Length: 314
Image 1 (cartoon, helix red, strand yellow):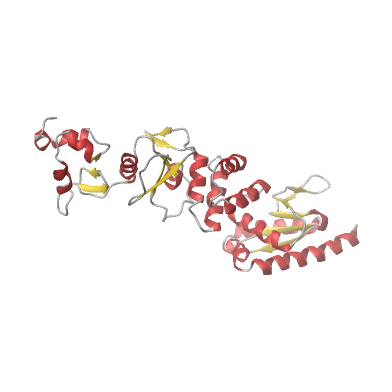
Image 2 (image 1 turned 135 degrees about the horizontal axis):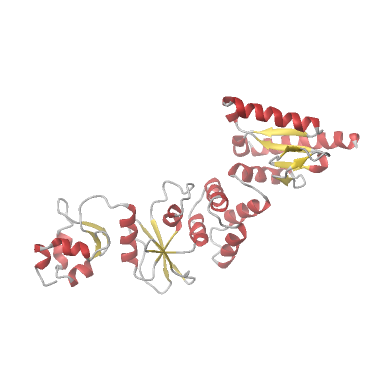
């Protein structure tokens, strides 16, 4: 495009962009003076500056894909998307609403730095580039853990990792392997969560229950173990079962108070426990976080009382 032609045919500029996102360097190649590029990004003018050297050929709000394209143009051709943006692309609902910045990995020798809505992480361990709808992305396990390392809430990390395993198809072993391969920074909580998932935790509440169990000092129960009577009839699948005391631990919410079917199921379950000679301790999920030491004490007391009774019966 010859100098000046872009003004007569602005649509041709769009054709050289990524959905309207383009670098100033590319615009200069197309005949647009650099000062003109920046002047057209001033308030009330038709373009918008997104990042240093990266513009939007329009004045509206960029959508998420345009932000990702802008980040990739800013960071260079070897960058890959990781973290929250990739986790959302994979459908994880536990990604915190506030995790809106586009997280990129670039080779360690690159000198580009974070700017605006872009987190640039320089790494000596660049993953192989894969493409998802034209976007270069890191492996899913790497993206999940890159996000976890930047989170501070154990509950948020638990929710994210549990969903990545249960719904996202990642194995705890694969995630632990990825943790071992990378930096130790920010890995303590993810490691503990993954150990709990390997024990059998299927939800954040069950991970919280495992934390409380560790406070109790009791032997480890069987997690999510299906119980049957001597005739092979199904009894229940408690969150935790202390076999040596015949004690089932159920993490039950208030929900059953408002749903007759669930309430009836809970009563039926408890009746099956009673018929099999199994005691049951029911705990609200909220108390696992608000009163962990009190719940641990209750669990220990129930275990000791039931173990004495169980010994007398046997």
